[in-house]
Length: 267
Length: 241
Image (tube, rainbow over all chains, first blue to last red; front, side, top):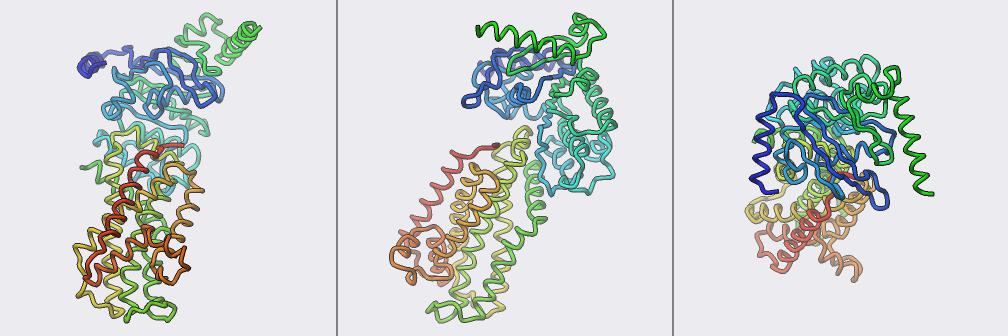
């Protein structure tokens, strides 16, 4: 794509950013291979601004690989990915100022202190918010001087989320934000995620905890063995399966169907 | 500029908080300088031990900062996912590398100042040094050792990298004409040592400290090391495991 048409698309997206439900991420025929292993097998989906798109599935289903390609830290084997109308690899410098990324493993130097890291990330994004404000939002004001190493699992996750928020992102990639977090922390994280979407951000959140997914999702992407089992709004998914069915029931149903059809194909 | 400054501050704070690093960068060189200048373990024929030691310790300091310290820290940053995460921010590779280079320069200047200060108090006479030449050599030496450190850090697992950097440091130190002159090593070993970057840097620095002419072939060899090591680092570096 020429640089000009790329720019044009960005402008369009920017003009529309006031309204919700515009496509922020568009993935087509994505394949990610690791040597012998196919982690992501030819998947396509869209994620919209103003919505929480939850990526669910068991460990090793391809959730993280997909998120990493979208956030530009991993290269796709094939397929196209567009984030805010830009290519996450080629237009990395343009995209990086508009996205907030929370990686699965923190990514903070162990001896760095809470306030210091928050301040640094605020600086990196041009001080769109203050470190104090961020820490208050994730309830870490009292841990300001604590080093990352000494934080509990839940505190680490909250700080990591705060760092992603320093971007005031238009797209947020959150990989397992609630893993290892206690119930109060979960409530807090969930409310932050909801607020982020309400403000027009496209939130992509991976989790393998289906109960969590059910509480926060607008749209669900179900992964298994690198394939997309489902790509639908939560209400639709639950509507077709019967409202009293949980996401877990739905996942088990779809998962066994997929396994059966694959073993038939093999025969 | 604000982004660069913020990253530089972060680099220096993390480094300053790491006691092991400070030991390597400040305490070890100074203790060695004091110890060897006050004892008779050195077999140098220099009339004054301190004249032999000053350029030696400076080479050692460059190796510690640019190779070991930078290499180990970067290796751990890579394995902790720090580099990966920074890669998603507006920081950018160029500013990250510049911040690391600047952090090294800050430390090396501090080491140089401290060394000159301690050296003088041990009776060293700075009147014969060629400061411009020394600074240029420091720059070339730093690029060379930073290139080597980052090449290892960019590929090896953090713990293995840690061992490799320390092992290499010891080898380059012993075969670097730093405490033992290469002439005193067994013939083959001495010949090998002659072309190692640590030997090249320490002998070039020794000339600059005594205001002698630089041996041009040595200077060219050191530049070749620097270019090769930096190119290798750029080509092979992986930002995350």
